[in-house]
Image 1: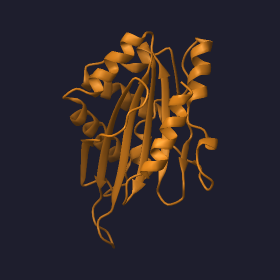
Image 2 (image 1 turned 90 degrees about the vertical axis):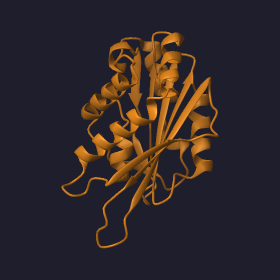
Image 3 (image 1 turned 120 degrees about the vertical axis):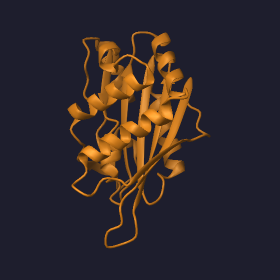
Length: 211
């Protein structure tokens, strides 16, 4: 179920005629070489449906649909370590730094927690098998991360109904970083335990450093 939560934040492949921006988002995007040994590519959910989730999330925040304003965008491959820990990135360029700043301000606003919770709850419910949707999704802000010009971070916790064992939880950190007019989003999930903090900061340092 970790893949469901992480995949919720994919926004699709490159979409721009701006060759410089295309090259930039590709360079910044998470790569296999950024990860420790033992990590590999894992299947990701359908990016078309995920882009619709992104559009509805932006509407909830009071922002324009990203696909109507971005100048380039790319979603990385999804990577997993084999124990339920997974990570994926989305990088996009906006037409100006002002637009990107306004997106960051919306992420930091009062509506963001509720909008993200609705987005993740709807996404996980749609993708879960019958009877397997989370019984609860909670979202809180996550302090302590500072990268680029602005950083906004959330931690979502998915609680699944009990089966043959005790109830299972999946934790997903959603970190949004702005650097100039570049928007970088990492979604990092762990089963039972949050994504390792040291690795999370290391990956953010690498991708933001390339922007």
